[in-house]
Length: 191
Image 1 (cartoon, rainbow, N blue to C red):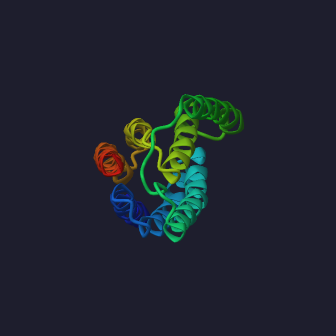
Image 2: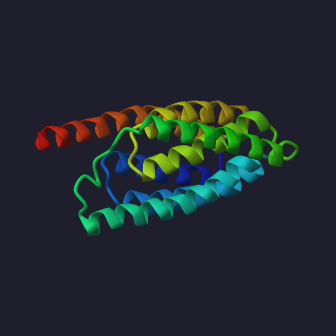
Image 3: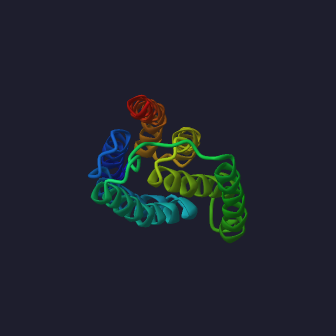
């Protein structure tokens, strides 16, 4: 276990807890955590996971700015988590499938676990986009992705990340509950 794994793990837990409470400070904390995770993933031969961490940093910046814009604009309902429409769900599924196929083709020979590594890359990208848009479906997707990421980390003997992803699996359920309560209380206030 490297010091980068440990620091990245702690920062990532703080990010998810902050995101569960819809705190804007969570985004820069998450960005720092993902950037620190890149070297350990590269060292373990998980190229797609390393790339995913870099993309998380970029998407994190996007989420940070989107949440800041929501606060500045104070748009009615902008900060209330929403369910996706059927069309949005279909688009997210197609996006996942396309990302998985393309990343599988790109990383097939460079990853030690290409099918799972690229599936997690694809799920993480879709889930981060959903989280930035405050879509409820982000958290069940994170639940599955985090559970599988824990398995991958164990396979690669990345123990801090294995524990981190188990914690994140639980926090995904917690975050879903927090967002549901936030949504329900906001809905009750408008009726």
